[in-house]
Length: 453
Image (cartoon, rainbow, N blue to C red; front, side, top):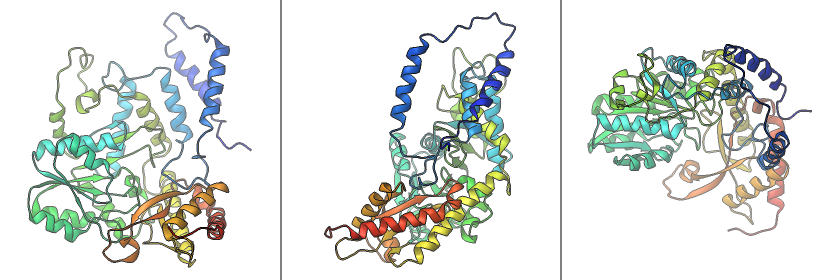
């Protein structure tokens, strides 16, 4: 039984032959692979070393937000490497630049934007950096706000950009607290509020409708960091409150999304898009040897990064051709299955008195605590379950969560919890097996001798 998908490799050879035929008018200069035996030996070493990994491809890996790209993305990426296009200028990536523009337009349309400016970049960190950089150009000297559960990158980015940054407290569901936000806004000096559309810790979605209502009063910019949760705008099984945030995302000034998460892409593939194409003026620069081959837009003219892999654009374009970004399509159904898996796990956990779940999942991330025993406190039990699960080939994750998410009262303490990111559609089909292993691991952890610490 094959565990790593390999049959698609046969498709690559015929595609390469088609690509090679495009250049048949050029004299043959190809040579046989030099030192084939040595290359084979090195590749064998690579395969051996790569085996020192968790099985991210398997449904029993239910830990961090990690999974391999879809076969179509992998094949298209590899195919482009025989050309190795650079999407900085059209000189280096004519076809792949066109693919990138088309793919970005499809993502913008998914959020309801017909006019936009955007591009791919190395990942969510770089994408958020560009969004906050533009925000800083427009609101110079003003403070950036993000929730305390927002990705830590916003604080680091603000430091790099020498912008003032502050965190806003969260409610007990891990979402930005609107009352706390309002109180901070009353003190003035805020230029941008980052609304996190799917935190990477708990999958919580900030209350965007409320944030936008406050924008009407205080006049700040809104940046939607949808790096993790953005694609769930296509899901038809969100709860009403979460759905309301996605229905308003088009009202943000900028959006970040990571195709290398739910978008089925290899690392690194992030995306930043702006509602107002005029922000491209902040990127304007002179180059002595690029941008002359065509009067069309060169992507390097609207990005902070210079050389960028055209392969990422080719892979994304191919994936979106196979899986259009539409409601009710195959791609959307995959997102819905991940969320169904999370709802299923939440139901199982809440039916067992040994576990405590702070709140229902909004997307496909579930966080839960383990009740203490006479010998082990809650954090210790979570770590023991984590270790016991790994011994039976179930891979979970650990997360430090504010205790008040569970207790519903003010507390500065944090507790170690278990966490599962159920981002593979197959997680839904494997949930009964995953649950059985969680129970076995929990029994094993409780039986281990020890003391509360």
